[in-house]
Image (tube, rainbow, N blue to C red; front, side):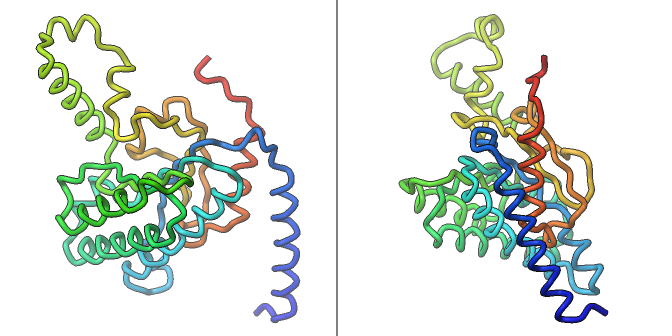
Length: 259
């Protein structure tokens, strides 16, 4: 068992190390856009013998902390994947509390008043109360001059692409463009203008916690040229030093952009 004295020493050494890593980050190598897949909430709760809702609550609390870290180093856009379309098939006794936790978390982010909130996902698949919370957050923060936070709820990469193509077809049809004409001229830029994140820079860095090394459908189109960082820590245990290491790893890489 670790004594209080040893714990204080460890904390002091960690703080010194964090400051060293922070100072090593070149200002011109900070990612503009970070995407984060928050994974491991359920495992975190179960490992302590607690209901999974405890893990979701701890994970929601970590989001605000994470956003402050991003803001401090100069990140301009953050996309936080809170709930996938696949998650919507979870049992009601888990899904309903999770949706309430998400609603509360979004309300708290809105109340901070520091960031612009932008929902990304299929809002039509969500319960009306959750969808309204997300829309209300976007409206309430639309004039905030701060970091843009994409809250991905009811999000799936394949669904986003299907929605983008559907939106493109409807827009072109409304202008009297035939399918044949559209097939001749459509390109990647046409589709990009109909994504949930239209007008935003693609993520430079995607972080996933819990040791899983896969995207799982996160920002499939946008992350084609992103750098990835996989961390063993479960999301509620993700620390400031873990974040700084992720950013340092990104800064040390030579990005090739597919070449």
